[in-house]
Length: 151
Image 1 (cartoon, rainbow, N blue to C red):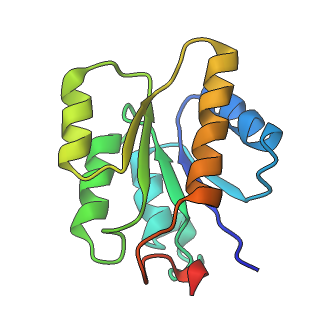
Image 2 (image 1 turned 135 degrees about the vertical axis):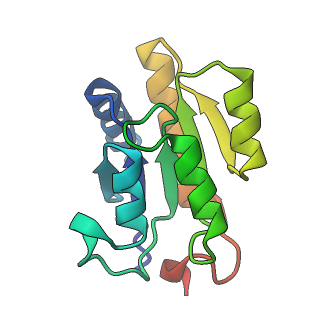
Image 3 (image 1 turned 45 degrees about the horizontal axis):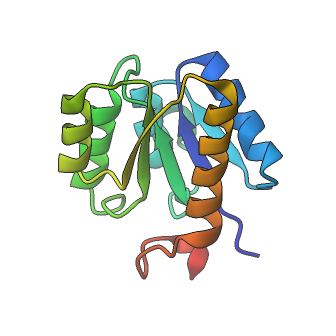
């Protein structure tokens, strides 16, 4: 069975709860791993620190990455992911409350796959997250060899 994981990098507990609820309501039975800062995200993806026992060949299907994170910003995480051959093609969606044009520009300059602003309205936020989950987990076809689960 092709079981795809989502990595959610989110430091706001309320946004995390809303995202998790929206994914469940859209009937996505996928596992969602949550980390709460930029360094934890890198540790998870490169199997370091508290994630040293995680299998490195099991990359998530998509990373939902906030920009405003403690320790390392989402933009710093994205730059490091793109600089490493193991994660250079990993789908990364910037999911942020930032409306700064510079953040959007820097996200795309670092090859984010998508930039999505978190809506303020709960229902709209839930719908946006559900659409993201369905697209990246059920519709999108990753590049050949980019996702070990698809082999």
